[in-house]
Amino acid sequence: MDLGNLQSIAFSAPELILIATAILIFLADLVVRQKEQLGALALFGCAGALIASIGLRMPFSDRWLVQGLFGWGEGWLYSRMVIVDDFAVFFKLLFALAAFVTIWMSLGSREVQDGDEGEYYGLVLASTVGLFYMASAANLLMAYLALELVSLTSYVLTGYLRRNRRSGEAALKYLIYGGVSSAVMIYGMSWLYGLAGSLDYQKLNATVLHGHVEPLTVFVAIVLVLAGLGFKITAVPFHMWAPDAYQGAPIPVTAFLSVGSKAAGFAMMIRLFYPGLSAPAVGDGGGWTFLAGADWPQLMLVLCMATMTLGNLAALGQENVKRLLAYSSIAHAGYTLMGFVVLNDAGLRAMLFYLITYYLMNLGAFLVVMVVANSTGREDLDGYRGLAWRGGAVPAVAMAIFLFSLAGIPPLAGFVGKFYLFAAVVEQRYYLLAAVGFANTLVALYYYVRIIRTMFLDQPRGDEGVVALDTHNAFLLYFLAIPTIVLGIYWAPVIALADRSVRFFLG
Image 1 (cartoon, rainbow, N blue to C red):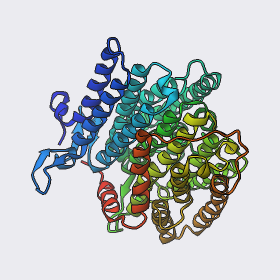
Image 2 (cartoon, one colour):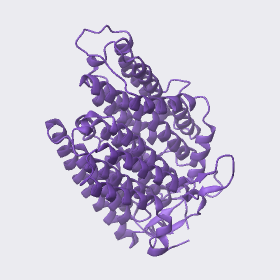
Image 3 (cartoon, rainbow, N blue to C red):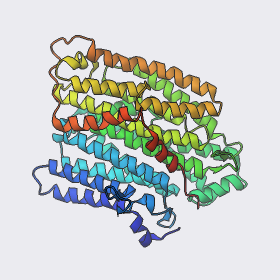
């Protein structure tokens, strides 16, 4: 299926819902005085985009109330600029959920409530539109435009606290690093365009795999493109912006960047490197082959080990919990890349499953950080002393669940996610990568347990303040904590969804 612009509109319902909701929020902001109503409107927009993506069945029936993209088939939209397949729909589901939780967090965040909420919610939705198109771009130009939409809105959201010097500094650093990485990436894309004579992924694939091109030229182009993609997923050495940006941004924005923006970077990278620069291996049970001489898996292997190692080692000495989780996020980008380098569908399936588990446990950890910051105004580790005994028993227990899951302790979702990643790596005999990953898991366990020990075993000094958990944030805390436990025990439906979503539309 190859549709033109007008025909493609019917398949763009999730994006159109988000765009319409963002415009409505900007207009309503001029007249609405109770700004929380704008957040509620944004929640409805995210829910609508989610339903339009996956559909809605009648209870106890096979009849569809809303037919989602999962049931509409697959093909190219907008004259081969955008693609619809199960892979794209999976990430639209993830992005809509990430935006929904971010907006829910924002409605309970004192940082957000002190600013221009209408602009904030509109920008979150606009950024989500960019995330959707990053996952479904089938053309280098479309991929770049989507990435820039996400980047520009993220810069503004990071500097949302206009009276906070740290927030302004974070936004400036984010902008400078992002501008440079985008420039290098589009230069690399120009190399690929020069080789293929087209921006289309499929034509690029045909040129690289079957044409007469110099492998070294392709490899240099790949390295340049990785500057932009590595920036999005916070891979070493393109990670330097993340700790400052995560620490300076409002906590809901930090959570959104760590989950939504990172997952979009992985989605864009997978679609470019697998259907774009590789081909399914014949009779190899889901394996992929790439151009001989352009050894991008070896390059990604080195980046993978460097990313998880640097992220974990840098997190060891952090005293600010937001900054510690920022370095932890870098390390988890390295773990996720383990599934990327093995060149088969099992590795990709493990990546998708791990992104779902990471969504739950990382958003949950940042939610607890926000709850503590709302009550005490503190983000440092000492502010968590005796948290369980000064009104924060539920946040402390939830934080322990999320941190143990991030560390990969059974029976939690993070353990199952890491199990699939390590299984895919060991199956392909990447024993060194598995050993490095296991060693990094032990390192990470130390600084996660350090926070848990502080919350439960350290005695309060008296100046930490009392932590209060309101109903709004408590509901979201349970929403994230319970699936984190359940997915560690019963994960079959989610891994089945990930397995289905690895199928790309190749024309």
